[in-house]
Image 1 (cartoon, rainbow, N blue to C red):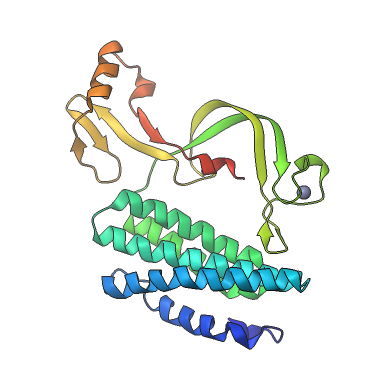
Image 2 (image 1 turned 180 degrees about the vertical axis):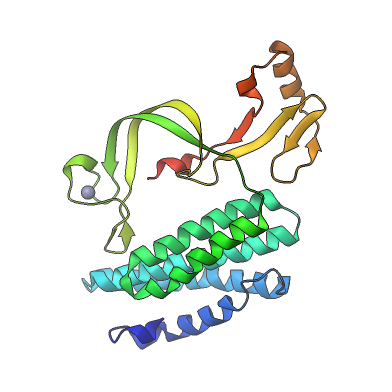
Amino acid sequence: MSSTTDDVDPKYTPFDNAVKGYQGLLSIARHDTLQQKAIEEIVRWREVIAAWKREAVEARDESRANYCLGLECLCMFFDAELNMWLLLKDRKPEEAWAKLVEAQNAIANVIRAHKIFSEWQIHVGRLLQIEEVVFPKPRFVSAGLRVRRQLCSICHEEYEDCPHLVGIPYWGEFCWRILSDFTPDHIAFVEKPANKRCRVTYAYLPEGKRNQMTWEIEPYTTEEIERIAKDPSPSEGRNYASSIMHVDDLKV
Ligand SMILES: [Zn+2]
């Protein structure tokens, strides 16, 4: 990665070398112990990179701070994908799906952080192939919100009035909108959701609820039985009665 630029400090070389090793572990076939060890190492790298980023900011070098932001996102990408493979091997496909989405978001952020990371684009396509081949296609949902006020995460002023733009890095941090005043309006089924973790999780059937990831039929909880008893004839629209939404969907 560093070889594509002249201005990258040799102090980053040990991390570059570690990254080459982690790339070789991005497969379901690799041994759990090695993948786990890499995850533990990445935790330590994140502390090192955070210190590099602070140094860059103190040295008033925004390009370098954004480069360090990219390295942080690269750590998140490796952590998420390695965990995804471990969770799949541990028969936890729902948690693995959440990690896949985390890896996809992280690699997109790597590329946005600094132009030096453009070669990592290849992993965007690779993760999309994993999504399509390894997992069943989820039914995505999206939250409709009425937003009255949103603030900028960089300067904390009204987003509409400030000079920062969502998704652009500034001094090693991405700009995003903080929704400070909003009300949920509706939930919609969508083909391309803002957050792929927001998906239908269960279909309610007379014999139990079918997990939409594993396809297993699971028993209802006592709370669900009580709720169904109060409303014994759900309308067509309630066939898919249970979905999962995430608050970080609001970090847009
Ligand atoms: Zn701003």
